Length: 317
Image (cartoon, rainbow, N blue to C red; front, top):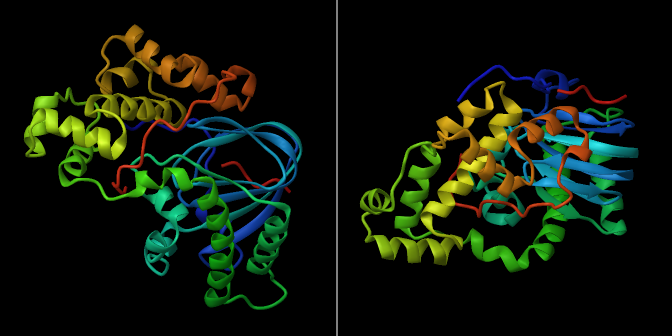
């Protein structure tokens, strides 16, 4: 599932200069569309001024003052319809969250949601004005170059910032906390298999055998834990993989469909348009240009419940 990338990508060595510590923040003014890009670190974008549209695998979302987007590593995103848009970005190396701050998965539901699926979607938060002011203060403190920064200091400011975001996110997502509950072992095993090889022609009987459960019981467990049957989960997983490959590779569209188990190109196009409101070619074009007019006005809901599995453009001056 690899092919040469067609879009810009942040380089970590550039972003985390000048002192190479694992957290950095920078304010960007976006006066034009920004085409799809990704990076190998976490990005948290806080809008402090203006308006625009944030484009990612979960659709097009209007953004304005107080909007926050938490982008996992290796997930594409873009900006469109930028009007006096100012974004205060913070960048965090995955190693920091996996080692020094590994306890955050247990403490902060927001971080757990970001880390708990093989193809994570952006997490979105809307901060009230008071919290925006507090967040900006912590971001400024992270990047204060007038005094010598230490790892301890920047991690402390980062933790306060993440706590501000988590409180707002938890309030907005309280009704969805059930999806973060532990999965039944049979469901967990089946999900692990599906996510490891979504292109394989899985059958319910084969999944049930691998998960050491009876077929109808496995369906009931999936419905209880994830809200959908196993084969529906597989189809949604394929749709999300396809969306990522369309943006992040040069592979022909028919080839993408075939490697995900949909040999019939017309059937693949119908499945994809049903999920994302666009044909695969229009979806790819929209992402690479950053122009939201190519996107359906209907914003799809996030396509996958969390499963429990784990898996550039230059800054504007």
